[in-house]
Image 1 (cartoon, helix red, strand yellow):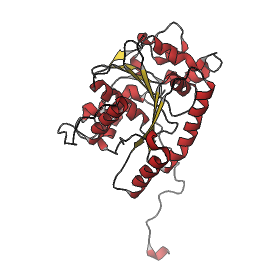
Image 2 (image 1 turned 180 degrees about the vertical axis):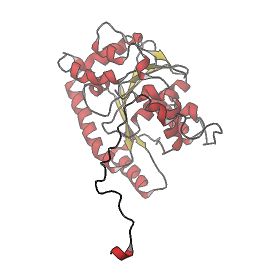
Image 3 (image 1 turned 120 degrees about the vertical axis):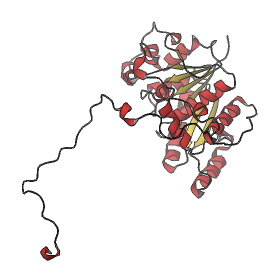
Image 4 (image 1 turned 60 degrees about the horizontal axis):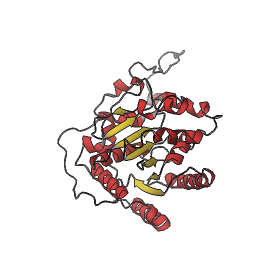
Length: 306
């Protein structure tokens, strides 16, 4: 039986680039020839959306794998437009799994059990975890061999990192099936020109040493644009600095030499690729209620009245 390298991207703080990293790391690994499965374990379904799929279009999702014993992982996996990259999608139903599984014995082992059925079909599995430390994240931690922790170069992000590391340490003591071997801290939203960003990088490397990836993810507008196109940045802007960063990260994880590349202009698309109105189509949008002015319109301002 083959050994499946399983990488969880995890951080209980939102906005740190966790889902962006899960999508683009998966795409970069697939570019190297690896067979990759991306599991969307966040009820927000941003990894599903970021690969151009509608979360509500699937008859079965990862929610069914976790809550229905008869549903196998292979039953929910779908192809993506990226060669060698498959997706186990999710939708908002996954939000109910935390409550539904609360009293289930062995609930922290469910994802790992599901992965055993597909371990021969893939070389790498990447799990996008929710921004919390609940049952879903616990499942990902127990099932994983590696953790990638995106850490935004920001003070609040550093404050939350200690809690996450403490949780992982406790989990490794309590859960015998836990197979986490490698933990890597990935600095995101890096801006080399700012003193604060450079200071955080230096201090992180001083404190954590080799736990911090040599690769950092720079702040880049192409990363913000790519989800609106439903594509990883490696396809949306393959010559951008962001695409180069994630290829370097994949190479560092696989312990191979990264491709030599310099950022270049992608002369194809710019800006948002999807109208914001499409996101809110059919949604209830509240309207601000303005109370009528009982005294009539306000008279024009005059210096004589002051």
